[in-house]
Image (tube, rainbow, N blue to C red; front, top):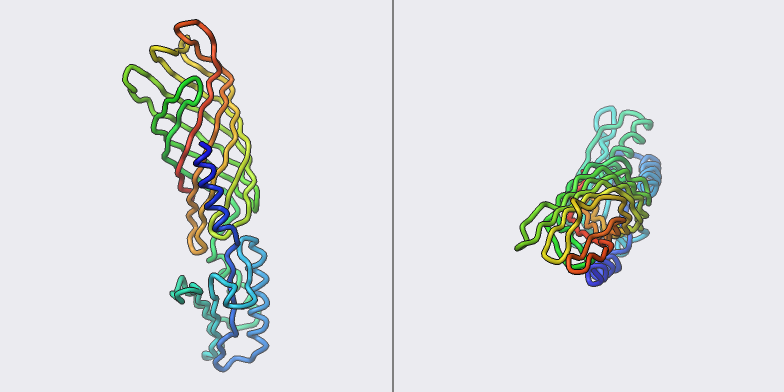
Length: 275
């Protein structure tokens, strides 16, 4: 567990900064400079309002370049936005639209900045991983997660169902199912966003070995602490996540040899995809 957390912190430290976008001078063809100045000012404002993207003052400081072209055509102006990687100048995406009046420029800016990806809102997710017992002894099973998230700025609220699939571990019989609610704080980042938060839920456990067993099954309140990272590429709407949890279950298992009751602690690691 400590090694996993250390690896996550190292990844977060190396990719901590927000993505920065540099907007060079607008390429004009038959269009007055005043239109270009307004378009750049509005574009910078809309991008910065997204909070997860910064506008760089120079190309050297940027991760992406947003080149804008304005061309006079018939009774309107063709506006072309092209996003490129700063390092290799490869195109990420291009958006083109026609403006017939100055008022048409703001909707174009709004649509363009939405292409950076929508961060806030509800998301559905699924995950695959491992769920196990840490106390009284180590055991683990493959696990499936189904979840609904609400993400707003630095706040994340998650409702999820976690199922540790029943596996025959020699003479052992272990399965786990839980329903959980958890708020988290999401730290700012570039393409990696670390998060941390507490959680609460209700869980059911079956565990039958030569050394430990429940009278029937374990069930009851579960508290946990979770941490992890979100991967949000600037040009995709899909979020990838790694979720790590330490679970404290408020029910006890019996040690067969002595009849002593022992609290059950658990853990889980899940790789997830959110849409």
